[in-house]
Length: 191
Image (cartoon, rainbow, N blue to C red; front, side, top):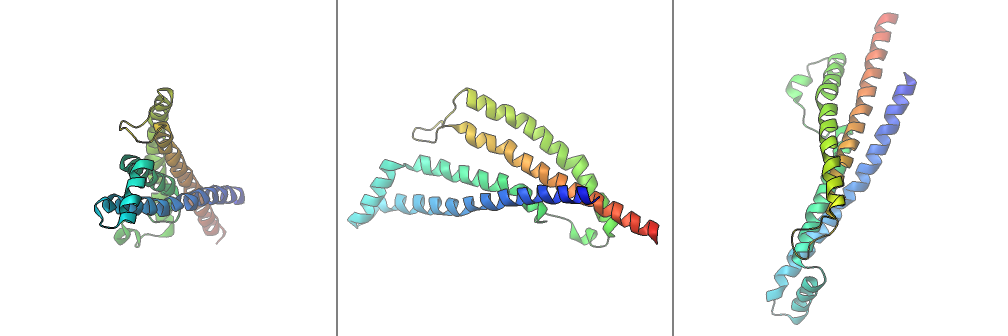
C-alpha cells in the first residue's frame, strides 16, 4: 500500500506544480485586460501621450487580438487548474450531509464519484477534444476575426490537456482513498 500512496503523491505533486504554474495565467489575464481596457479608452483623451499610447496599442496589437488573448488566458487558467483545485478540495461538496459520515463512508462516496462520474466524463471529453484539436491543427485554423490570434489548435488542445490533468488528480485521490480504506480495514482486523 505504500507503493500506491507514493504513486498517488507523485501524481498529485505533478498536477499541483502544473496548476501553480498555470495560475500565473491569472496575473497575465489581469494585466492584458487592464491594458486593453485602459488603452482603448485613452483614444478620446485630451492628453497627447495617452492618445498616442492608445494609437500604438491599436497599431501593434488591436483590440481583437488582446480580447482573444484574454479568453485564451482564461481558458488556460481554468483548464490547467481544475486538477489542482480538485486535489486541494476547492470544489463544491454538500458538507451538510458529508460531515455526518464516517471517514470510510466518505472514502466510498469519493471512490464512487471518481469511478462512475469523473473518470468517464474526462475520458469522453478528452476523446472528442483530441479530434477537435487535431482537426483545427490540420486545417491551420486561426481566428475568424481579422487581426486575431493564429494557431487556434493550441487553445483547443488545452481542453484535452486540462481534462487529462483532472483525470490524473482523480486517479491520485482514488488511490489515496483505496489506501485509506485498506489501512482502515487492516486496523479493524488487527483490533
